[in-house]
Image 1 (cartoon, rainbow, N blue to C red):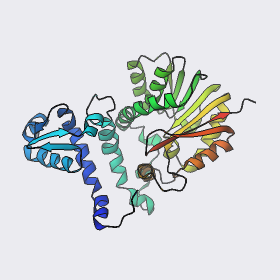
Image 2: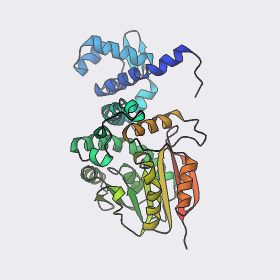
Image 3: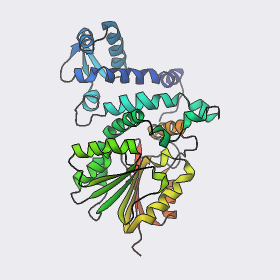
Image 4: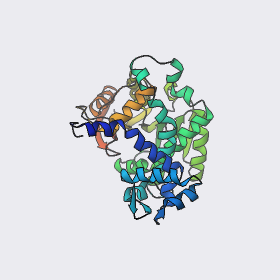
Length: 338
């Protein structure tokens, strides 16, 4: 990331929340989907969205200024990126993830960051994920968006790691099964057990049923930190878990993975990680900041630190790769066969 030297650069950072809000509103109003394959005027977009033209015109002007839309005469069209990633039903669409999880939930958490950092915040603002997911509507909102954002990375993960020797995988805090579904689709002999909170599990069962994988993906409802895990598994996956729990809980997660795993099994950790020298990438660093806003005792993790945790728990031959460029990394290692 370029070092800041000008006032304009500081303004771009300070006003960045305005650009993100323009993006979220456009998603809620289906602007990108309505523009797919056809340029339209602000007047027509306003009619399709059912809102006044002046508001859509202002939104589209902002979207054009930040490169999400293109404007030719009075007609707007999607940029290549918007067409690929923000149109509903597109192969790599993650618009629902942005408008539901980031806008509806995570955006609000960031408003309490100052209170968390200065220790000036009410305890019920930083309740655990267990209490948060005990709210059925919050669990649904979070899970729907998380599922949408997991399908693409799940496909990449399935092609990155050799699962040919894995019969039974335990997905700890695996949500509604976005990763598990992709792993099973790519590995026809794989079975997965997912542990997550009860409301999340209820939603997950429907997702798995829709994917026609109910015979291969099962669920256990509960808090993963209670360690009521099945044993004799061939692999353990933890995705986005290390950043979401108190830092002091992480070593025990790795040790528990070792306890329930068969000799020669694979332990996989996927999460937002900054580089070992803490130079970035900035999206991973910002995501860790968001986790801090909800979990004040969360730890900013690096690949070398995660590798050390895995090694201390007894895992060998640890490998590291980028999964989501600029955001997440995967580390995996093997349990000794002895």
